[in-house]
Amino acid sequence: MAKGSVVKLNPQEAAENPPGKLMSLPALTAFAADCRRRGERVVLCHGTYDLMHIGHIKHLQAARKLGDRLLVTLTADAFVNKGPDRPVFTETLRGESIAALDCVDGVAINAAETAIDVIEALRPHVYVKGSDYIRTQDDVTGNIRREQAAVESVGGRIHFTQEATFSSSNLLNEHFSALDDEVRDFLRGFRQRHDGESLKLCLDRLAGLEVLVLGDIIIDEYHYTRPLGQTGKGNVLAVQYESQERFAGGAIAVANHIAGFARKVTLLGGLGGQASHEDFIREHLRDNVQPRFFTNDRAHTLVKRRYIGDDAGKLFEVYFGGEALTSLQIEHDIRHWLDSHLERFDAVIVPDFGNGFITEGMVDSLAGGARFLAVNTQVNSGNRGYHVITRYPRADFVSLNEPELRMAAGNRQGDIESIARDIAGRLGAAHLAVTRGTRGVLMQERAIDASHAIPALSGRVVDRIGAGDAFLSLAGLCLSAGIPADIAAFFGSIAGAMNVQTVCNREPVDPVQFQKYLTTLLK
Image 1 (tube, helix red, strand yellow):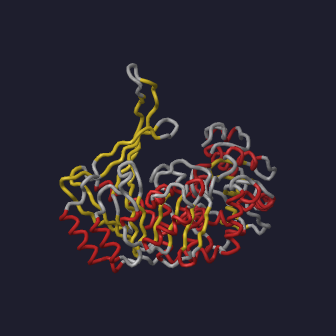
Image 2: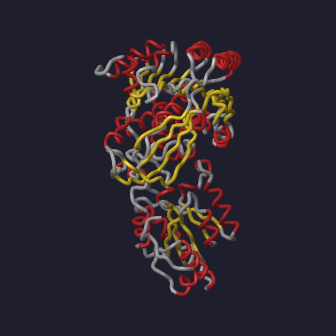
Image 3: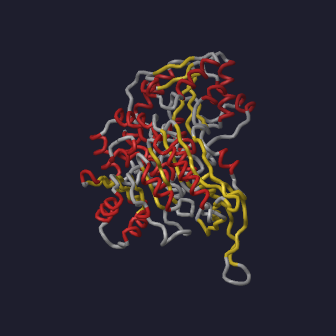
């Protein structure tokens, strides 16, 4: 919670001396209890209220008529998942705006995704939502049903107002800087071609897919430090260690992204018998991911340790293990497994990080046997100059960033669309995507010799690590299901935009939050 956003009172003080309208949640709880003791009916509204407008005012005024006291809780900034760069207004400003209304008696910030905890704490007689929440089938999170159960469990009821509704997201998208002109123009045209219902049906098509993810298993470590300055002798930066965090990265992250949308995911990768990290990896797999690991007792599972400065900038990186994971025997065993199982998968997604796990023989098996093959060959410090997409004789979908594409073509200055057509033609790929960071994504579609440009859908970047993997996961999954290329690129871009707003691979793309992000963009 932002400093200075609430008045800190203990429950006894709050009951004896009601504070200003904007207060802490414990103070609001005590205030509500005091109201009930006086026989007053307590009404509760909850929401984000990112942009106060006439719809909110009419909704709150209607709610106030249902009781003697109207209390309002707002979702804290850290828990707002409504799309790019939201909320636009901080929790403090949002709270102050609500508190300024005469019909409101108390306001607090709720540090949670739902109102369930505040309902149980405040015990309102009536919990009020707007008319746009009446249709339970539109509640992709299921939170309204859970909140209704919560209010009924404390003896209250839910009520839906019938006032005119307006969309904060629509107003913010159109008139504020949450989205720049390029993104607004793109979304306006996209909405004309695709409505929300058709896009939801596209997502539904992904649920029945069975997917194989094959690629490098990577443990990402972040060691957070505080700079101390230059050492006494020599031009070396010294830092003070503060904390560390581990993430399940590489092909594990891709499998987890996909598992949120597809029915069943098999993860095939290589582990080292020494420092395998297998327990950690299994603990961080989604329930519908089935791992199939091949272990080399003489090798170490790859760990990438990054040292992070106090401004979240990366200072340097250290690789541990990962080399020579695939022995001749393991290659033979993996190829035998692929030959026996590839046919059953609707899609094979290959995040090839070029760390030595995927051999030329495995590439031949994948190219020859996969029904749908999506590949990314990542260029990184461990393989620069030695790892390009043209090692694959065939792929149905290729996703590369611009340097990776130019390196594969040996063309530093040429037109990017021409290079994309050339590389796609060499691999027989129906689609090739070029991820371009702040310039968005270019999706090449060979069948109609056309490209689809998607602008970057987030202006807020916490960490770029893993964004390309998130794009590959969703775009590849969509194309394997026959979803149009522009929608596949759009969905992949949303996944990438969500991923850059978190540290490394701390959380996989969540399908519910994905749908909320999508809904916000389309308003």
